[in-house]
Length: 349
Image (cartoon, rainbow, N blue to C red; front, side):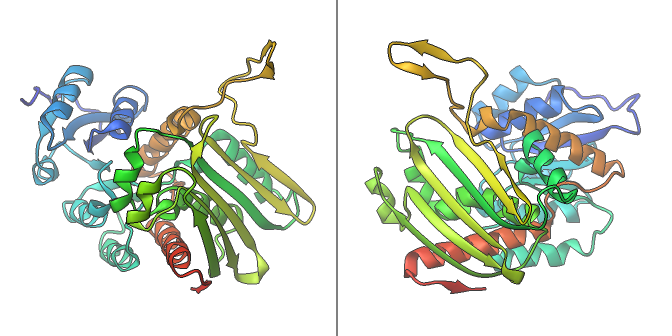
């Protein structure tokens, strides 16, 4: 089932990538790496599912196909591993990739367990020459990046508060209800992006205390997993900085992600109006516009810029993505929010 891949004439500046996981997000990453990332060459793909490997053979350039992760790690044509696998597998797969001498990009989260995050960081210290990046793609969204640069330039004075939300369009099929058993809950699955954005925009302060609450507005099946479909949270950082989070699975109008940074001399907002494009419709029902239906549509550019930045870092450029330590802090705060939701009490970190 492997397609022939020749290494003859390989450009020494090309990063040869092997992707692991070809689900709905993995397919997006694979197509970016194959066709839209200069300096990268997708040379291998791995999935235990026959239909996903068949998709890769039909859709992607010639590459080695593997059913087992160990076989891909043993592939000497692979310089870097790109992980788009279940969250529970991330920590060990990252360690295995580093031990195999591969650079590694891994979709968020690093792990749902703080101890596992710390184990990966400890293991990574043995391989300082290898890049390890976690996929918090909002750092690469052009609007979020512009806001970050303006905060860094002091345009709003000293930033002290971030308000951020991740709100998905309601999915009546209940896909995420089944996923909730392994997702870690709404704060580790959705709000973890907002946590990373808040720390990034506020200068990476240390979290001191969190409080979370939530409700089941539509999807009663979440109760069996101790999860909610709408949640709110507050995070107190050192030096008086704050973050306020809202996560939802029940938006009627579409995917609605946005953030606001408030400083001593002004404020910045990102994505306040979740427009799909600039078209407005005027009819007997009023004036309206279409909204982004999914996070794929909202962050398509961010996923691409993220991939390009990782390849540049592997080739010796600056590390612009979220580090393992950044991912540890996101999991630490997200886990505390989950504990607060369950206990009804504030949690000290």
